[in-house]
Length: 110
Length: 114
Image 1 (cartoon, rainbow over the protein chains, first blue to last red):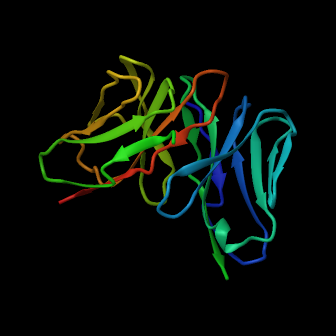
Image 2 (cartoon, rainbow over the protein chains, first blue to last red):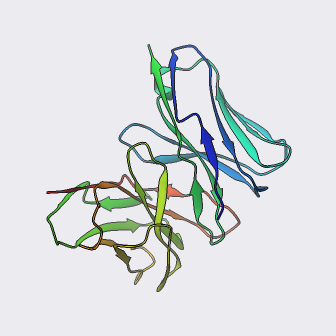
């Protein structure tokens, strides 16, 4: 079945450093969604990418969808302690469900 | 305020006991989902329902059961057959109007074995 690989599993950064997480699929994706889960919280939808080569920005967050629609990345510029949490990518399953990557857990040292 | 309500927030299960986790939404969403999250793991799909009175097994349905008698409600029962139930359980819903709509999550239920 559909799978999406997400790396790295963990990332520890100093506040002010940049952070990037990557998602890769062996098959072409129709779209990809990104979610953020704060410690002890629930996943919250961040954004959806649909078009080949698409780039979207939300303040310090930049989301990219690969030209072949098989990979995606989330980049955070100048991390802050409020960025702490686990970032998940998710792709559509065959029944309207979502298939989540295992997530990248970001910790930020002040 | 519209949203998804999961209860209880914490739940303890005794050996051989069935427990039911509640999930209610007032977002008028057709589709609802149950996920299990273990430490260091992503979200794994247990059951989902696209419409009232219909539901499908996800990747890890063994030891769980659900019902969808009302659009607003999608309770999950963790049966005694689930030998390792300790986890964080998340309920989600989404509208099926338009393709690939995002999922909205409840605050979750943490289940532990006594």
